[in-house]
Amino acid sequence: MNQCLGILRVVEYLKRDELKHVLKIQTTVLKTLQQFMISRGFVQLMPIVTSTLTDPLGPDPRSSVIKTPTIDYYGQRLVLTQSMILHKQLALISGLDRIFIFSPNIRLERKERIVTGKHLFEFTQMDFEIAHATMDDVMRLVEDMVVETIKAVKKYRKDELEQLERKLKVPEKPFRVYTTHEMEEEFGKDWELEASKAHTQPFWVVCHKREFYDREDPEKPGHYRNYDLVWPEGFGEALSGGEREWEYERIIRRIERDGLDKSKYEQYLELAKLGLLKPSAGAGIGIERFVRFLAGVEHVGDVQPFRRVPGEEVIV
Ligand code: ASN
Image 1 (cartoon, rainbow, N blue to C red):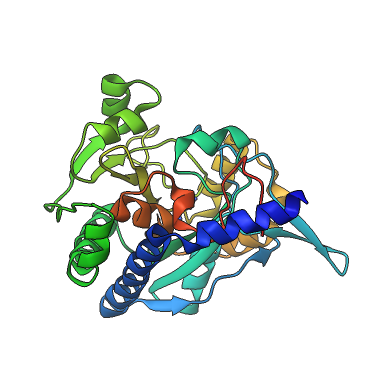
Image 2 (image 1 turned 90 degrees about the vertical axis):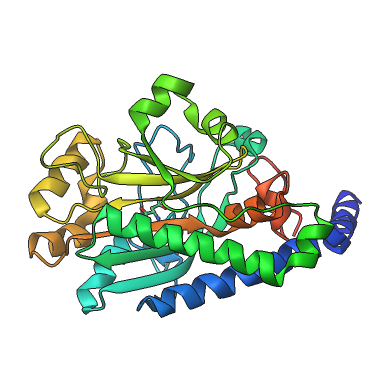
């Protein structure tokens, strides 16, 4: 009986006009992002959802995953993708220097995250990586990408934006850049939401102490050559990325510092030891969060026809 009511609620949810408008905007976002990346010389890879290793997602004070999901396949333990960061580094070994992927990620976030408006336990990010690039290269690329996508949505989804009563401004480049230290000083430890509310344009926050693959500045230990893009108006984090560690010794030191189990990264470390990883930089932009911001909808789950919100029951 309950299940029956549940599935009928899904039908009601699917039939709403808002969802149709949002999904049309999303279609324009996906098309524009793909065309943009191809026009900048990127090669598109298909995503993987199973592997022997994945992004540890920590230690990042803002991550809340309760566990890494695993499946058993013919006696082999495989993890589900939390992000393709390590595979992006490995893919550069192919000799392709600019790659991107629309990558589904599973992150089993704590149920309390239902209230943030921006968490999903299954979502897609457009993940990309560039060999021999710096953080400035990536930041300029992302600014062009964001501006081009917003322009396309304003042009091709005018009616949908009107129906949603969403007024969108094309942001000015370059976006403002702050350090995490400046953000903490002004808005406190949990700066993201308040800082986002205080802005009308997307902005960068650089220098985050987080996962082992983001490069620590060799000239300024304790500082990190990584970055987040934050949407304005309270929509919060849009993208995260960084320059990467590629040298075996440095990666090992970071993994040890983070207290991670080295055996989980055995194959990756073997290739690092052989000197096969390249210096690179990249990032991943959350598709549903981008669409939520563009459409101006309340919760990122409202962008999904089949909602995957932490703490919400999955009906279908
Ligand atoms: N995509 C991110 C990056 O490129 C990693 C992540 O999603 N955790 O750094």
